[in-house]
Image (cartoon, rainbow, N blue to C red; front, side, top):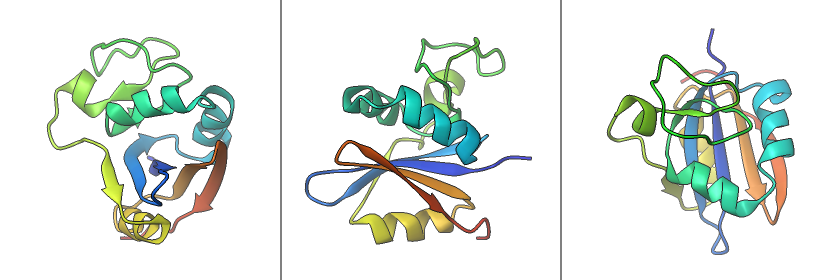
Length: 126
């Protein structure tokens, strides 16, 4: 069963740039990976640039077949499966980001603010 999640970064103007993630979004997996492998804002920006993702891992990695994910690589819907309409979204503020993602069945939200990760429990209901 999927544990849907969202990854966001609060920008200087208060907006939140975010993507959706489908698998393994619970804090012991996605939260741990973000806390330990996405502490550089440039790396996080590269992740967000690639849009919605199926599963996050410690490396962004190279393009690969969606069904054949190399160990340690993140898999993206756009880059690795060729889907359209999966780009990062920009929300006016944190409240709007959480409200929008609550409506997309996300259970957890991870937000990078001023170099620190914050974790949110979001209801799993649409």
